[in-house]
Length: 492
Image (cartoon, rainbow, N blue to C red):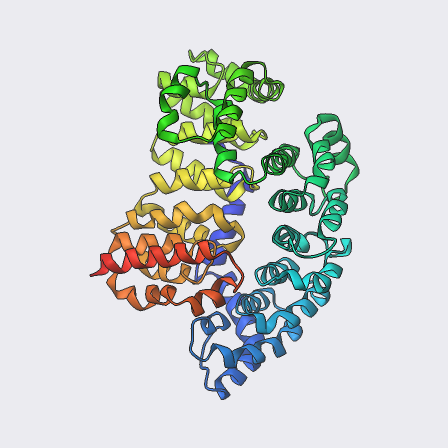
């Protein structure tokens, strides 16, 4: 498919890191155990015998391990070991040690910040405020986002408004202000809706330069959502999504009237829907979005037209149907697209062609893509991967830098019924908060009763508090418990 050497080199690098027989993996293990030997020995002397720090999670002796882990944390220099220790310290007892480590650490500050964020209470604002200083860069991102839940803290809105001028965390500050429904921030947020302001912002903030310009679209989208939440007060996020869908999908007044009883819309919501319907065709933002879409895909649509596919957007191509010649064009253009809606549309189109060529292209693209649409690529891979893809899929799902983008791949590992390594891999992924729920679902589909003890621990709220952090949303914990019960029922 004409993939570049850089592409293949990156894929090979990811594979080598997670292939237990590779030289890279052997050296990494040696380095890990060399630096962890003293810590593991002290744990063993305390009656906690483990071969890696991550195994401490879920043990009855966890509380005895926490002081030992916090003592060793400042002396660790190997990033993988450092991250393992921090992941085991998502507990209030270790809060002060993590705050100190955040200000000292330059190994993996983002991971430490995330651990602190999961435990934050409004009364902690005074302690955490110095950690929001610009010198800490993008390590502050999850701390800033968490500020949105600290409504009882004085001056938090003012701090977040100041951070709107900080390129490293502006996206997270916008999200936090939206969560707080901070009406006083509305005028500053509205600046991010103006293209001319965004253009200047991108060129004048060091934290933004070097990123894809598509990040400007994310800033605008986040600002729109925050302003919407401020304006509507108690309106839920689901209604935001519904309003966006209604802006994109033509809805006739007759259809709204026919479905109004079923949906039980409030008068305020109905008025909002009516306004959206009345203005959708003349909405400047929608017109501009369509213009950018067609401009970004000009070369793609020209090449499609030259082979007989005359379309103005890819939904028309999917409706009409297309052959291998169009698939070749779509896979050729996918790596060079920088406009997120067009990128997602290409992936959606390729999902309809479950061929080995398309799967290989998407697997390469998942590794190469810099988050422009990695989740959608992962979703497509999940629906078309086969047993023959297991090794590269294994490398991908074990790589935590891909975070939530791996979720649908993990959940669909249950489709690889002929591969013996699937169940052990899913058990390993139960220790990864980003994909644990999806691993549980997959184990349930496989009826892997031998994993019962691993799944049962997700029913215990004490374990979930340690695993996710005591102050993570109860909805997340309930979701894990719900899926664990479903899986256990399938084991019977």
